[in-house]
Length: 322
Ligand SMILES: *Cc1c(COP(=O)(O)O)cnc(C)c1O
Image (tube, rainbow, N blue to C red; front, side):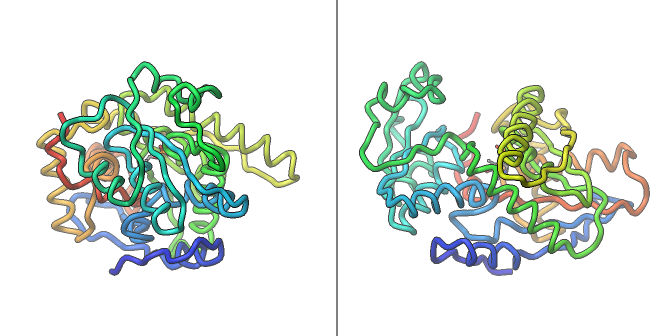
């Protein structure tokens, strides 16, 4: 299966690419008794990939429509969002500024090296300043206020971001090849879980938290459900009310923790399925699913769809974690 390249910033072209994303049936002994499929959104684009592409989409379109020159955003040293924003800026003709938490290290992470290579200006700020990133004064405080720019919050977490995830939900509703019993998705902030829960009605959505913050992931997912419902009420659109379902026992020690047994699981999965995973999100997603199977939580023949949310560039240099 070949990765596609998003070549222009155009909603219909994006939708066409997203509708063509394959659903792949996994044949593996790691999930005995159930049927597992993966929707390969890692293939949407090698650089602007997975859920980060959907979160950026409407932000980028708005920037283009308003004639904005510079995208300003922020993240940590291993942020898939920074990476995707830098790549999108290079591809679609925006300057990019990435505000990064902490001091500039002597050796940049592979992710930040790429971001610089894509032309992103990196602006390192103290952890203390970084904590104020959702305050209106933040950019002024750190001297990153530039003319003719838009600010995209960390992780692409704004209403435009969650609308992009709802677009993904709608596409899944329209294209899923068989009738599934559940959709599984990896969660960092919970925005993707909230956006998908609000837009998929044919089967329930279950999140797997990849960090020790189950309560805040649930809260964030619910916050986006509420924000969507409010914005829909204003425009007369209907948003299905939904619960948030989150597995929070599979963070494997915390964000970016990658114990040897997870590594072994990932290798076995990749070997049997031919589908590459990333160490931070999708490996924990598939691991959680295999554990739930082995603990007997599914009835025989249950059909599960897992979302491949991308992040594959995070595979490189992963030993730098810890
Ligand atoms: C960011 C990210 C997620 C988590 O998305 P949230 O909306 O923050 O929960 C999942 N998978 C990958 C690969 C990501 O990069």
